[in-house]
Length: 373
Ligand SMILES: [Zn+2]
Image (cartoon, rainbow, N blue to C red; front, side, top):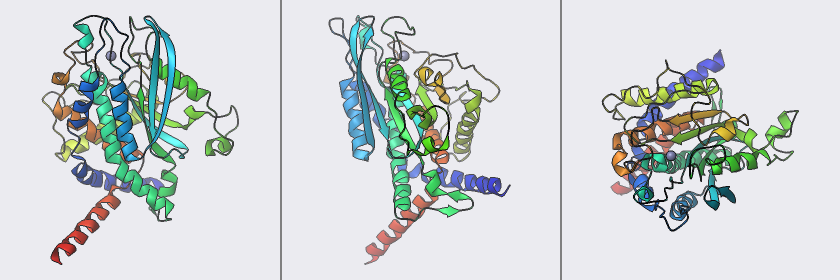
């Protein structure tokens, strides 16, 4: 009971701190990343094979290298209805040595159409905006993750009220950018989610070393990289003003509830704008089912990974049409998503924004002192 009470009081403290602190120094999100991404998603044309979004990959890599995250790329070639195509997934991990991960993911490829004007398709909600949200999340969480890492390394990890920061630091944040989500012709088991199928299979065959904490804990089959995933949170078709999310998995229904709670608290604190008719993004009275929507999560779910699927349901009205460009995006909805994700991730990882706030205050009082001099 004491532990539960400690947890409850910590959650209350986090909510107020994250709500008041995190958005303050992360206001730079806005449209910047999605605007950066959308123009670089150059469409294909009838004479060439689909571009493999080289500029998008370079941009994503550039951002994460600047933030100092670990990068993994998994280039591969696969057969498609239009011939052999090169694909590449991008995987970024804040602490590559951490034994467990909270994974958020989106696909960076854009749907290919062979002819004009279809070949000018951009895919702003599908999925430039979700990719931009992940970039924003990385930029905004890095200071908190870094502060924790420094505390743990210097023996200053927080230990109070039943909270052990060193233990919390064993779960890190990993962001995955899938290639080849879209079908080239009609969606099928072999013509869709090329990158996700490759990565799930690769990680299933990548066994953990005997010294890995998860190896020590269990009998049975040798654990593989998939076992290090706490939950896979997949973002798709977001950024339009209408983004109702239905909980499709009983196992992660509580996380769907946590996200709804973050949304509610942000709204009550006046930190997000809720557009008319968009109050119910996280309904609790509707449940979907696991196989309702095919997407990048499927090969992971089929291998036993917990999944939270953040996909607008119904799909945005511009889905797979030329209307899915920047005009389909809503700035209030993008900001709302970015802030929900920050609160969700900070709470899931038990990050300590109150410490960040203290550091900010210390820094500003030092600045004030210097100004006086
Ligand atoms: Zn699509």
